[in-house]
Length: 148
Image 1 (spheres, rainbow, N blue to C red):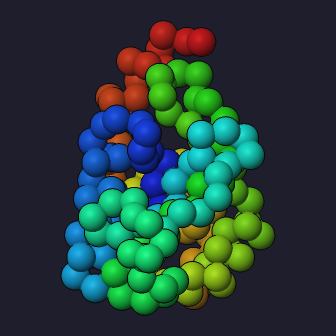
Image 2 (image 1 turned 90 degrees about the horizontal axis):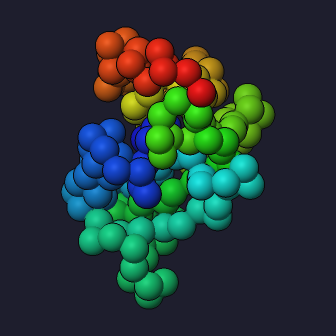
């Protein structure tokens, strides 16, 4: 399971890394779930994709089968200090339900923000967690210093 607070349609390094990681793992036969903010407070329906990108239903491996990549897009709100950034809305219960539904072997977090924190808490004691840090305080400070 890959959990990120930055994903398509946002453009940037983190969305590129997480998308490529999911597709790379899928192309090697791994089953992958990506959890990323939806584009609205209501979120969006999960959508399966293949290693080649979004595909028709006939091309999709069955959920949980090798090569399957599922996306879960919980609701989100706009982050006022970073253009295009959304903060995912996922509570403890929703995160635990997501862990139960997908039953990952490992959770790979790509940010310490809302979705990363919820997934980390839900995975604790259940499944190993790996964290890749893409954030440095100097990267955030200029945007935060400008204010709303």
